[in-house]
Length: 107
Length: 119
Image (cartoon, chains in turn red, blue):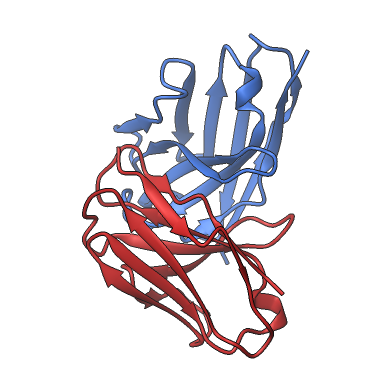
């Protein structure tokens, strides 16, 4: 099973600043990585797939990078609606499909 | 517009059974792989099961293998999760999720249905 880790667990940022969330896989997943955003009481929303491709209707301030075992999600110029929990997920080697533990981006 | 609506959640005693349903609309259901993903209260996301578009292949997390069964009825545009021998640790919101390639990312999520296993 591929284990996904994320850092930091919590990220404190001011509106207008940028934020970077890191995700690491226990073995290479190529570019088979997705990022999701989840707000309280809502289901997750797909942000990025293929490590760097933005999903439909996702603003350009969200960008993904990396390959192999190291990945990043960068949110430039944070808006109030961006404060949420972010998860990475690998779909390279399955089952199981595995998620990171999440990173909370807070004000 | 893709719409996924889960139902069937509720409170059940340990050892009990429950069947979840997910009604799909706004797309050709029979063309897509579908997953169940769960989230325990205050916790992260856990993949539960996958069924391919034609229903022929099914995959499960080790934590539910032998106790849960994923199925689908393409004539009714409905996904199911039959859960047996439920445990306290199965308590979670269960999400129905559409996968564009039956082995990839989760592009559309339902709102979820809460399953509580408690005596």
